Length: 282
Figure (cartoon, rainbow, N blue to C red):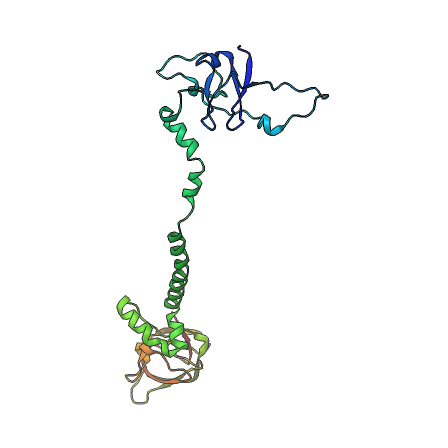
């Protein structure tokens, strides 16, 4: 193996590891693979052997950084495709190699290695768009939440009902009364036989909305029982079945309002002694 020697670039003070064969390729003329300076590698040979302690310390700036720049072995090939002698991957480029005829991939990787980081930085226009998008996204979130809870908002704030009604007219949705069975109660109820018609029962009841906003009319469950209070027959009644013609089921029962119910029931096929009446939402 050829003896290793070291030469220092006079331009950037970088130290390269070279061999005598490499220096002999172009009479010692080499090109620095770091700063592209052409210099006589033989004239700038140095020794990296340890100095005796008795000697005065050398100027670090004069010696340059004790580093070796690693370069591809292709950098030592003479121009014209001539075969290279034994060369070291850490050697400088010979004079005449590099510059405009250098490997474009290696040149781009070297010259643009820091500019790539700059390209990744967002431009002012992109930053401005991102800043403007934040309030728009928040506004979209608020609108979506308001649309999801439109029935609650329309019930608690009647002034918003026309706005939601207009939006639903376009989107094909609806604003239904709230369903809160805890806000409803049956104040009074009665089940009597109709004296004029055998087997016909008359159900009378008063429903009350104890909330301050409209609530949807509930379903009623009527259960006829025998003398032992056991169910004989059970029937669920929808609002459209028990509400009179003057009641608007779609708008719901007004807040703090009540609704009187009177319903005729055919019980000619059963025998009953009592009844139970409940309200619920299906």
